[in-house]
Image (cartoon, rainbow over all chains, first blue to last red; front, side, top):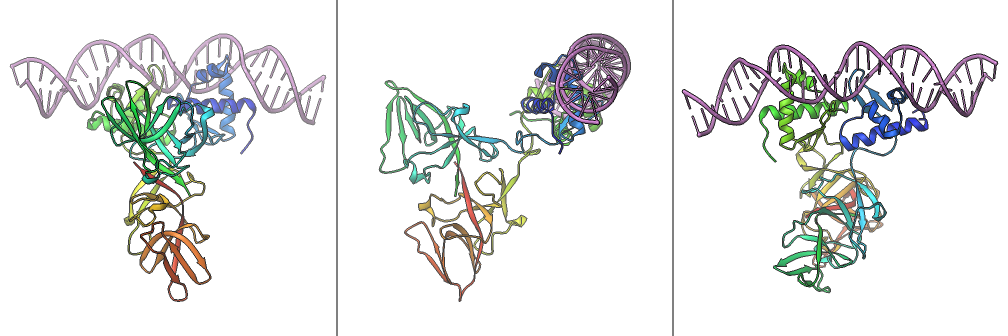
Length: 205
Length: 205
DNA sequence: TTATATACTGTAAAAATATACAGTATAAAT
DNA sequence: ATTTATACTGTATATTTTTACAGTATATAA
């Protein structure tokens, strides 16, 4: 495959980003706007070059008739890359780039319910539920949880993975290990934030 | 999610097929041609209905500005669908269609090593390794296994998932549950076929 | 010095496209 | 008997979009 010039590479990336974001390809004018060109012909020329080099194909006469033949990066591959977040002691498990340990190629719909990220398990508090240290628990971001759900809860600056049980203002976070004790929270005295619930688990052997 | 009428369903399928084939969405006129309508307004009305019901979104004023919000089938998935095979008592876990319980959308490279299928775990013999009944163990087809690997072995017509340990002609298949005992095989007297080894595990909560 | 390739601006026209409006037809519901 | 929902045809137009053409500028190679 022929090498791309710096500008051609930018244009290809622009098309891929647009496609990812909207689900359909950009027009010449939209590429121009994104990359700061002032003439649609600038985009046109780069697209023609990309077509000649085999990276895209252009359906002549069709609006937005661009399709990616060969993605320049592993970018927008086949499947999604789901982020893995460490169970950090301080703060909530956010999807900010600096908290992402790595990404795993898999489909967000691989479990019965969709999920948003993997949480890497620390400690042995859920071992009797077959959840080991370094297992990756698939978390769906939601506050809609029921008693008995395996949930991610933030208490102060501590994030924990436990079974959920709530009666009025009394919240119990129940471990699955007899050496650990249930965390009891009186919601009138302390706040607790439900970050999400587990919909599945994966482990690498 | 609201139900679709027969025609709306056809139009949505048409959009998905077109998108799969070309990489960009169809115009109203193209939908008409595909489905035999004679007025672009026919397509327009169906698209509006699909938008109202939440199946697609339409970027107003943009040509081909259709994006799929909720695919009607699991159709047009990009990623692979990995087969799940039950740990059948008789015969080896083959990939023949009749043995496949279902398929899970995920990437064969999601674990450190690639795998070929999921094996659905029966029984509690590996529970101390955190492997529960109905967990899906990702199996890589190989005979290249080392002592300590978690392997799928076939003895006669029995298939089992155990830890592997071999010294000369003495093979031990070790469970992870003190209520089960190690299976010892003298390879001079009985054959044992290594079907593959586990590279990971997934569980749906 | 003269090409040659890259990288654009600026304009304009033809073609593609979305989309509104005015109808028609049919089956089911009220 | 009349409304309501679905499912279209047919036409027209404003807008979007592609795409050709005529230039400009700069760096590199011959």
